[in-house]
Amino acid sequence: MSRDEWGWVLWGVFAVAILIPELLALRDKRWYWPTVARTAANLEARVPWLAMLFLSGLAVLTVHLVFWPWPDVP
Image (tube, rainbow, N blue to C red; front, side):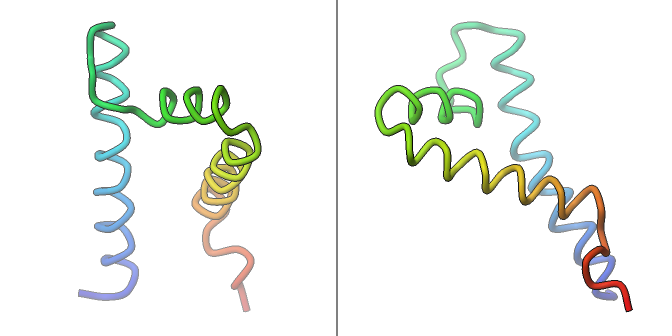
């Protein structure tokens, strides 16, 4: 498998691992599995600076995924 194919597999698994709990929690309000949104809200209530780091890390990850392969374009 090429490096690009491994990237698609890795990020596809990551997306599914995030999307499935989020969609199930959206459909059923009694869903007890911690989602990314609930984790961010709990962190914001308890440790605001850690929530800011967590959410900024997700923002950086999103920018890198959306604008891939930037900034490594030759």
